[in-house]
Image (cartoon, rainbow, N blue to C red; front, side, top):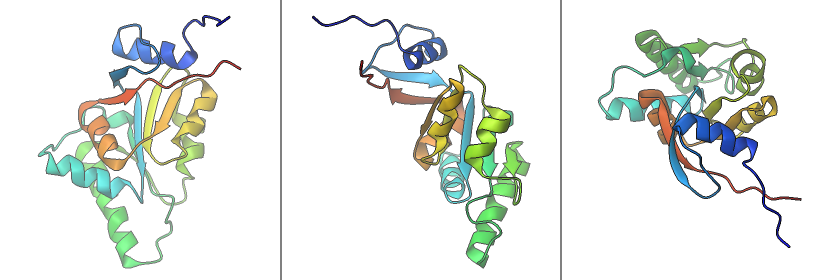
Length: 163
């Protein structure tokens, strides 16, 4: 006999962010609470935002660029990438977490994320924020560019296994 489950925590969080009840497998567009990129992925996201002809981002206070994965910089190419992040943040009002502030995965959970939020990041460890009862997932730089530019992203509501 198959047991019927109610909504999972992910389905509840996602439902609240797209104003309708959702279930596993649906493709939805949701409002994002926090979007982030680090120094390896951030310049790619910025390039995508600029290629869209967008000069502002929807939620600058909750769009964060971390300079942490290649910091301090050991090559001029990395220094240039860091300056791209700093200049974009200054221009748009996005947050910048600079060299020495800490690693993005840890800073997200210590400083920014709250239960029930949707957090997307151009880093595979973004899901660490799920420990705080948030829905958190890593995405590619192009998807993060969309999240920052428009405050929304699309994704497929994840499957859940009853064990």
